[in-house]
Length: 588
Image (cartoon, rainbow, N blue to C red; front, top):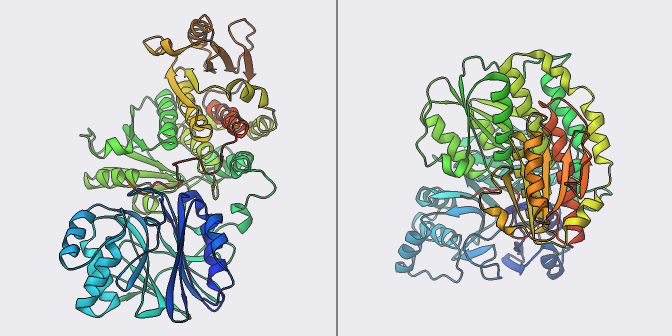
């Protein structure tokens, strides 16, 4: 989940690499480092903490035109200078995103060959293994090929060799990596936003492809070291779409883009109350499995309720990291849906591959065009969220919720339901312009909060609770409303915030009964509903627009996101970069 940037060209390298690293800081921000060529030698600088700490140590105007940089999310070893990237061993310097699963065996082998290691990381074995293979082959490309044959796990690598300081090499397996160009040079990066200030032209490296970047060209090779041609892509958007603009935080900016995201996603699939050809035909399937991690898993739970409600097709929702290891029961009429914002989520990608090995049809719901999951699935549906920089997903979650509700309509073949999306953009904008500070005021001083709801409201509770805990560090837990009394109600004490979501008129009285139970134990109850109810079982009420239950989740999530934002702001948290988290989870 680390970020990689590299540049080689006729412009000074350090401003470009540092700029790119700042855009990739959502991928990891416990340390950062940079390697650059100056006076025919390689220099390495590292620093613990944010990119700004590294920036202070560097003279960005150094006369250097070759550089690779890294921002880290720690997997092996504590965040410190020694464990930070780049790592050098022998003649090779490497930045790495991913996990090397067999690094212990490789390290033992290399120690016997006379190599020593300073860090606690798995990464440090990579430059040492490159150096060892290079000592045998005397050829950099051959040494890279031989090295990746020995590595087990996931990796995206930027590589510089002391014997060839006029090139940057790159290779990937399981972790994303792109190559890009502008008029004066060439880039490598973990993600497109890092290079948008300079170019929107890029290519995606596929598994085990090796890139060789020079001052005037780049070449791509397969595992036989034969040169191959790759299609250059153009990023659909502007650099401004990845900028914070006048908003205080990326998270706030991205929440306020949800009206446009809703419209763009809906219009991509629907026109005049009919589905466009962008939506495949799913008539053959009578069983559905939905797989995701974190927020994507919660979208799957929303999808389960909607698809089962309108189609009578049974839906199984599983966390991807569990699904890939368990026995799964499906047949030729089962569709496996994998949801991932980045399209690179390691557990979700592995679950997708497992389903494909079992010859089961797969559908990807992703935000990033050309990502691994989108390319490997049998069908791909893109949400139109645009770049999402804040670690806590907001607009991408809303777009996925829009799309999963459209899938429910598609499976049901009841096109009359498409009319329920009318006026939703207006409702979204109204909710975005409300003031949620009083709800945050009631929560932010507490260290425990509970969300309760039933059926689809419970799925929204899961996401609302996650938003609160990941941005504000409050211990927030979501429960089915009827389950709280089976043990966990013992944790309710004077003033404990309990947020109850009640939008289903068929079961609202049941949930209200559960809210009365916690109120009787002096909980502070925040009641979120779309019904006109005025009783004494709550302390605060938040009224949502009354819309069809098919599209209700699209509206319900917005106040939960903004309440989480306001709570985190009051607690002085780093909202866009929460502690211990990273945006694109490309490790298991």
